[in-house]
Amino acid sequence: MPKPHGFSYEQFGDGSVVITHQGRAAGTLRGARAEKFLAEAGAGDSQLVMARWTGAYKHGNERAARNHPRNR
Image 1 (cartoon, rainbow, N blue to C red):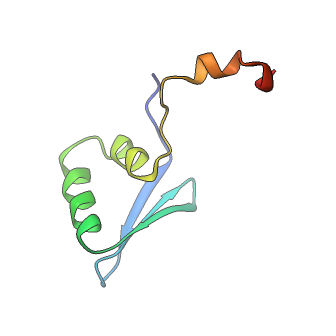
Image 2 (cartoon, rainbow, N blue to C red; image 1 turned 180 degrees about the vertical axis):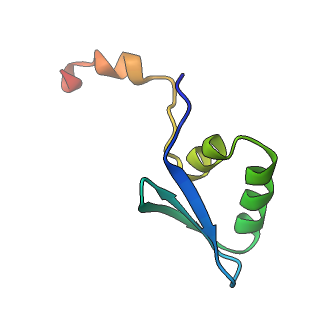
Image 3 (cartoon, rainbow, N blue to C red; image 1 turned 135 degrees about the vertical axis):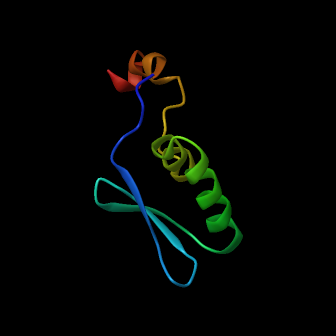
């Protein structure tokens, strides 16, 4: 599976975090969720972490979905 790319995040003074994908806002985290995200992003592959937190990651069924009649 290809690794996600194009994600970045910015932390603000009020503790909120905005995750962007290719320059467009993909999610905003505040409070405890923002702290948990920052701890996780600093520990591993940040692109994969941001993709997972925004829900913009592959689920593994894309090849099967391509062959479904509604997608032809």
